[in-house]
Structure formats: C-alpha cells, structure tokens
Length: 205
Image (cartoon, rainbow, N blue to C red; front, side, top):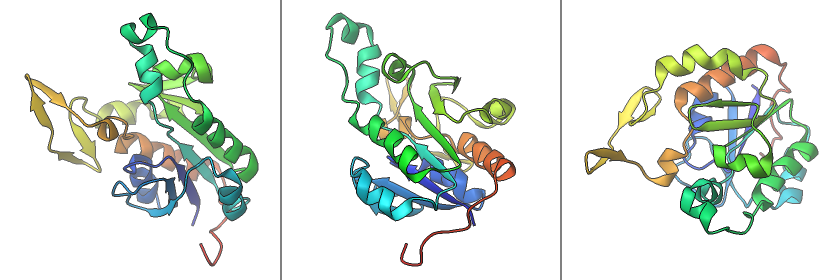
C-alpha cells in the first residue's frame, strides 16, 4: 500500500482523499483536530526526528503550512501597515523534509498571498495555490469543478453545518483551510496512476 505523509495536516482534507484512493496516510501536526488517518504529534520543524522515521519510505508528501500570516499580508490594510515578513520556518521545514525524505512526489498548498515569499505558484484551483510537483494537477480541472460548491463545507460528499452570519456562510479558519475532498481524491488517484509505490512503513510505525 502506498504511503502519503501529510505535513501540517489539520482536519485532514488531504487525508480523506488519499485514504479513499487506498493510501496509507500519516499526518504530522502539533494538535489533533479530529484527523482521520494515523497521527504523529510533532512540530514539523523537528525535521531530524521526522526524517529519521520516514526517509526512503514515503511515496507522496503533501503539506499545508498555516496560511494566516500570508493571508493577513495580502489584505489591503495589511499591506498598508507594512508588516514585517512572515515567519517562514514551517514552510522551510516542509521543503527540508522533502529533501531529506525524498518522496516520489511533493505538493505544498497555501494561499495566493504566499506567492511573494514562496514564489509564483505554478497552479491554483479556486483559493488553493500549489507548489512542488504539480504537473499532474491540470488534469483535475473537470473533477474539481464538478464536485466542489463554494460557500458550503463539503467533505466526502457530505455537507456539514455552516454558521449563518448576516446572510453569509461563515466558516472557521480550519474549515476554510481544509482541502476539498474532490481535489484531494483526484490528485491521489493521479498519483496512483503515475508512480510505483514503495510498499509500506516500518514495522514499528
């Protein structure tokens, strides 16, 4: 079974899609937000610990570093305040883990406002911007547009309750940041089709 390592995994948007595509999924985060896969509670900046455990065993790394600082600096009032550069330590740790673990594919997701610091994203789908090995993703356009309806929580085909506020749908930051199921699942399927997997994890994993 191929293995996906999910960095900064949050509520598990990536995990839901990769689990549905028959991946073994291990998430890494500092807190359990109700993650649907196996969870390894660590700060991703502890790169030596994580790399020692997973080097040479991972087929795909997906990473979704926190986007709040990037989003803030992308707002008009944030630009007007001339805020200092954001803390890039988590993003750097994700790239360092890519280099140390050497997965077959690496994908990092964040918001449009991250581009001044990460570089221009080769691809985006709605508000989700992607860096890394994104050559597969253009094939996802029809699947993504068919399955996702903005303004609702939608995960694994189920709409979750939203909180109405002045006639609009208000979502928590963790829900807004969650990768839509259709996008994660489509990418996972393309990964299965495109790369041979390495076949599992250590016995003590």
